[in-house]
Image 1: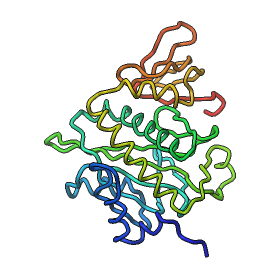
Image 2 (image 1 turned 180 degrees about the vertical axis):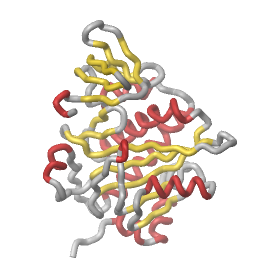
Image 3 (image 1 turned 45 degrees about the horizontal axis):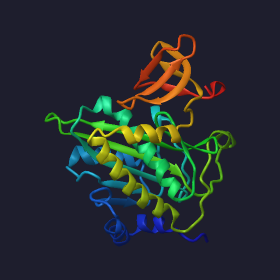
Image 4 (image 1 turned 90 degrees about the horizontal axis):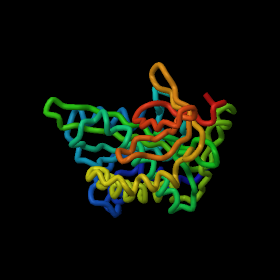
Length: 276
């Protein structure tokens, strides 16, 4: 019988979940923690929660396993039991949701990269919401929202990251995805704890629109900085060199043919081109 790690125990035991949340070195992130052995999707549960009640900002919903985990555009997220970090954070936004969602995805990705460095892992962000390790996808971010008539707007930041060794269900997945391969008994718990601290700090800077730090972090963290990419837009595409982020945290791509800089807030980044 495989020994359960500390995060599995937290998901199974209410008193351990409360002990974990009280141990967090945060002001509000994760102080209200809802932990489950299994859910269909932590994002689904978070969206239901914000429709039916008013959970405190920074509420975290975590599960050891998801039966219907998903990524962008409804793509299935393969996450074996006890191997991944699967959680959602509920946030309240004073801003219009539509323009800030891509920016918040960048802040979340930078926070993940910074957190993994604490654990001696060098990872990268593939704009706007994928985390890469050794050239393959190891994590993803899915941000969804609900708006009330009084404009008190709510966001759900969903995160999935492959932490422990995984036996891939489909061989094809192993060509595109990977895991960090960490094996320590408390590693998932520690990654979550460190992430919530880093993310809270960055989220406060984000609300203050203090973006300079993020622009510099992006240059070091982007999978494609100063590399040739293709951006797919509705009805068109742009091929060029990724030049980092502008002052609004939009992606800057220098078009290959004209040298013109395009400032992009939404789209799909292709890199390398043969992986469309």
